[in-house]
Image 1: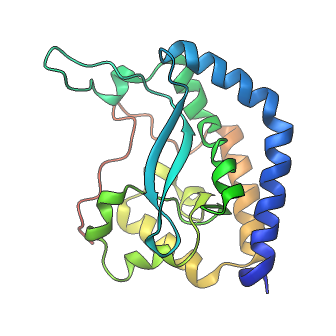
Image 2 (image 1 turned 60 degrees about the vertical axis):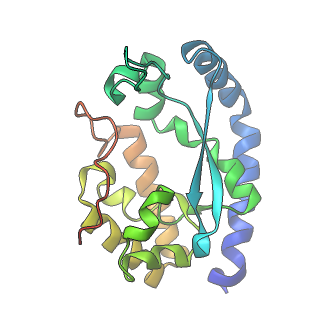
Amino acid sequence: MYRLYFKRIVDFSVALVGIILLLPLLILIWFMLLIANQGKPLFFQPRPGKDEKIFNIIKFKTMNDKIDSDGNLLPDSDRLTKVGNFVRKTSLDEIPQLFNVLKGDMSLIGPRPLRTFYLPLYSSEQNRRHEVRPGITGWAQVNGRNTISWTEKFKYDVYYVDNFSFSLDMRIFFLTISKVFRAKDINTSEKVTMEKFNGEN
């Protein structure tokens, strides 16, 4: 019952209430990033959802678009603004995904939606992460986020697909809140984003 009906009802209701309650914060962050990123506060990117259906994820843009003399984007660490660093560290950049949840592209909890160019690289087992809606947070995120390997991340994702329930979702929800307040398991190395997945198991 939860898998088929109740989860979607919870997702929609919580996302709607969350947007209403967080609207002043959304506007404040939008304005600050509008200035920091030269007029580009939001970030849109195609991601695969349930059954590999492509949608545009919405996030706050934490890096500017500065380029080198050859026209190439500077490294992530050089483009991450001070405001963007704070927004990312506190996971506030994820808040706009509540609109993705309202639309039905995403769930509050599920495997994180990754880049579309990874699709041909997944094994059949890894690809099972697309059997459910992707989430703003998930089992892999509360078990290491960017500090665990791709192999571990996919194992956690598939575990969630096989075992998700209301009780597991509640556990992930409260663990996420705890980690956000402690800013735990966020990769703070010079490479701001995680290493790309190369298809190895």
